[in-house]
Length: 330
Length: 152
Image 1 (cartoon, helix red, strand yellow):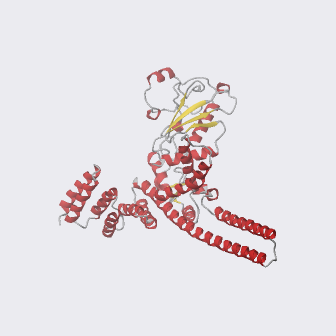
Image 2 (cartoon, rainbow over the protein chains, first blue to last red; image 1 turned 45 degrees about the horizontal axis):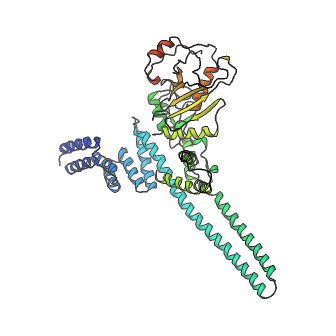
Image 3 (tube, helix red, strand yellow; image 1 turned 120 degrees about the vertical axis):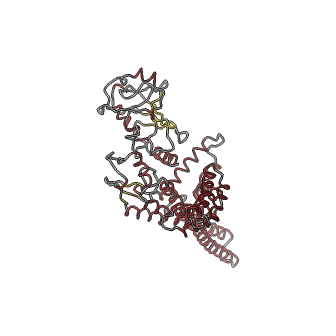
C-alpha cells in the first residue's frame, strides 16, 4: 500500500489518457488502485478511460466503487455512471445519475464548464426516457387497435353468415342477398377506417398537436429547460447556457444591464412546468420538425427524388419511423 | 455543439415566418448562411436596392456572435453608410463581442441592419474607408472597434 506510488501511476495514466491511449491509461490506473485502493479519483479516472473504450459494465463498477468512497461531491463518478447506464439502455437510471451529477455541479461555487455538458446530457436522458415510454404506449395502443378490429371483423362475419342462412331458407333471393352483403361490407369497411383514423389522431406521427410551448424553451439554446433560472428582469434561461454567456460578458442578454452569476435565482414554478411537460405524454415536435426538415433538405439533392407514390410512402411511413429510431439512440 | 441545433431550429422558424424585407437565400449547411435585406421605407439612398449578407457561425454560436458582412455582386451593391466599409465590413455594436447578446438571432440581426440603413441620411462611407479597405487583412471579429457615435 503506497499512496505515493499510486499517485505516480495515476500521473502516468493521466498522460496516457491525454494522448488518447485509453487502454494503457486504464492499465496504469488499475496498477495505482492495487497500490492504494481508497482514493475515489483512481476509480473515476479508470471509469473515464473505460468509458472511452466502451466497457460500460466496468465503468458502472468503477463509478459505484468511487461513489462508495466519496458520495457527496463526486460529480464525475455520477456523470460517467450516467453515460454508461445510458449506453446500456437504462435511461431511467441514467437520468437519476445525471441529475445527481448536475445537482452536485450546480451546488459547487466554481460553475465548471462540465455544467453545460451535464445539462445537455440530462436533456438527452429525459428524451430517451420519454421515448421508451412512448414506445410502450405505441405497443399497447396497437394491441388495443388489433383487438378492436378483430371484434368488428367477428361481428361482420356473423352478419354475413346470417345473410347466407336467410338466403338458404329462401327468405332472401340471390340479388337481395348480394345487395345486403355489399351493404354490410361497406359499413364494416367504414367502421374499420373510422377506428383507424381515431387511433391515427392519437399517433405521435401527428405532431402538430404536440408542440413544446414557447415559455418552456430557453431563449439561448432553444431547448426545453431542465434547470431554469430567472434574471432581475423576470426573463428565465437554462442555468448552464446563461452562465456560459455571463462568463464572457456579465450583462443581461435582453437589457444589457450588468448581471452577475450570483444574481440568478432558480425559477421553481417554471421548473415544475417543464417537469410536468416531460411527465405528460407530449412529443418532440420541436425537434422532430427540425429533423424532418433537415432530412428532407438532405434528400432534396438526390436527383431521382420527385413526387412519386414511393416518395410519399417514404416521407409518411419510413421517415417518421427513422426519426423515432434516431431520437432513441442519438 | 449546440450551434447546429440552435441554427436548425432558427431555420425551421424562418421557413414558417420571416420579417418583411428579409429573404433567406441559402443555408446550405449550418456554418454559413446568405440573407438578402432591403429597407422598408422610401429612403432615397437605398431605393430599389437589395443587399446581400453573409453570416458565418462558429461552434459557439449563439454564445459568440456570428460574423456578418455585406457581399457584393452585379445585383447586390454594398450599401452606402458611415458604418459600412466598401469591402462590406460592418461596424455595428451588436456584432461586436462586447455588445453581442445570445438572445439575438439571424432574423433580429437582419432587422437591426435594416433599421440602421433606414435611419441613415448620409450617403457616404466611413472616414478612412480607402485606407481601411486597402490595409485591412483582419477578419471583422478580430478588429477592436471603438464606437464613437451612437446617433447614426
